[in-house]
Length: 73
Image 1 (spheres, rainbow, N blue to C red):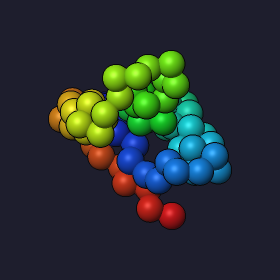
Image 2: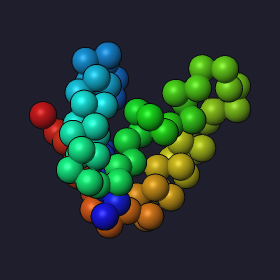
Image 3: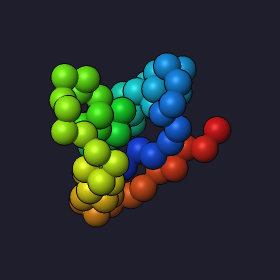
Image 4: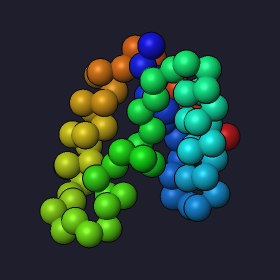
C-alpha cells in the first residue's frame, strides 16, 4: 500500500519529524511518498523550480497513492 505523507515542512524540526514518521511507516511495510524527500525544491542546485512544478509533482504523487495521511500537529 502506498501512502502520501502530507504535513508542514517549513522548519528543520518539521522536516525531521516528517522524515522520522516516513521511516517508521516504511518499517511497518508501507511504501511512502514524503514530499521532504521528493520535492524538486529539495535540490538546491536546480534553477527551474516553480510553484507549478511542485504542485504538479505533488498532484501526481497523491493520485498514485492509496492513502493520504495529513499530519497536522
